[in-house]
Structures are given as structure tokens and as C-alpha cells.
Image (cartoon, rainbow, N blue to C red):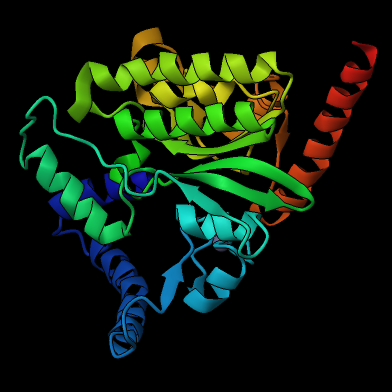
Length: 316
Ligand SMILES: [Zn+2]
């Protein structure tokens, strides 16, 4: 493509050459096919919006209902679309078994942060758009035969950023799991610490990590599930502290973004850098688990980890 453009420009410059005209006409005929597509698009405008989604990986148009039934995974190529926290919880827990914790906890604009919009306005608009109070939903529910403490982040709420509410809700969840002797599952999806809350956001890294240390001391299992994307402060705290770390296929996972790393190291990054599969090959991630198999695999892993806990208890 790039070479075609490069060769086209000088050709156009000496446009008097008759050989040039047929060439551009040829490219025009290839473009001529496009209006047909555009006409198709125009027709689609009559269909109410939001009924179809285009897969960014294979470009297939997928009926929204079909996408929902398939847990937002493209049936043609397996691309995992983003999924909301509540949809994911529904896909993981047994019906009506989930009791949400701290459902009304909301952030306070401690720093009186104002940018293009004030932090208070931003929070309000995301709360209206997502129906969530903040970027994580926590609670206790049943997955298969196991009662577990479950926290699910939602990237749709301010990029799944970790502020005081995310940190506090997860810490309370981890502490509840420790008190009740439950396994813990946190599904992460985050762009990192929330800049609107400055240092208060960064402190959540230490707080959640400390709570996890108490949970681990009681030999209770913690499965961390990483979804696209899990980065920065979340990746540098609870997301990588699991007994098992699993990830969805193709998820981007890392601390700093690839562009920053490329600029800093001044070197080419290997193919597939910072994907779940790349990190599994290098041992950071234990398993890449497709969304549709997530529940079944989590039950299997919990059984394995709880068995180890039982064995340890017998030996102690
Ligand atoms: Zn696809």
C-alpha cells in the first residue's frame, strides 16, 4: 500500500504522461467498488443503531444478540470484545447466588481536580453511562460448588482506573474472604491508577497487596484473571499476586505501554509483545483461558487449590 502511494505521487506530478491516466483510472475502478459498499452502509442506516457490531479482528458483522449469547466473543475468529462487570459476573456465578458488597460506595473529589471537566462531573457522567458507581463490582457468590469472593473490574468506567473506591472495595472483599475462609477471584481490566485521585490512587496498590498477604497467610486460594487490557498500577499490585494468574486470549498485559518501552529502550519490540500468549510463554501467566471456558476452568482450579489447602491442613 505504502509503495503504491509513493509511486502514485511522482506519477501524478508528471501527469502529462498518457501512461499515467490508465493507471489512475484502474485505481478509480477499484475505488468504484467502494460506493457499492457505501450504498450498503447507507441501507444499514435504516436499521436501528446498536444491533450490529463489527469485529475489529476479522471485520465480520455480528448480530448483537448473537454476540451477547456468545459472551461477547466473535464466533468467527475468537476475538474477545470488552464485557461489562455485571455481564461477566452473570457469566461466572450461579444464578441468584451473588450478594454484592459496598454497592453504593462512591469516590470523593479530594484534590478538587479540574481538567476539561471536573472530576465530580466525570464521575457523574460515567455513573450515568454505565450504571456503576465505580470501576469495580465486588461480592460473594457461588461458582460451581464453591462459595467465593469475587471482584470484577469494568474498563468502561474511566478506563477501569484504580482510585480509592476500587482499592477500598477490593480490600474489603479480600478481608471478607480472609474472615470467611473463602477463595478469591479478581477479574482485572484497567489502565492503572486514577490520576484524578493522585497519590491516594497509588496508595491502593500497597493496601490491596497487604490485604492479599493476610489472605495468603491463611492458605486461601486467589485466582487473578487478567483481561484486555490490564496495565500499570493494577498490574503492579493485586493483578500479579495470584496463586494462579490466568488471562483471556489476546489480552494486552503489561506495566508501561509498548510505545513507552520502545522509546525508552530504543529497540524493536518482539512480535506479540505484551499479549497474554507472549507472557504465558515466558512464565508470567499460568494459562490463557477463553471466556467461554472461564467458569469451568475456575471451578477446576479452585478444586485443585482447595485440595492443596486440605492436604496442608492435614499435615499441619
Ligand atoms: Zn472476528
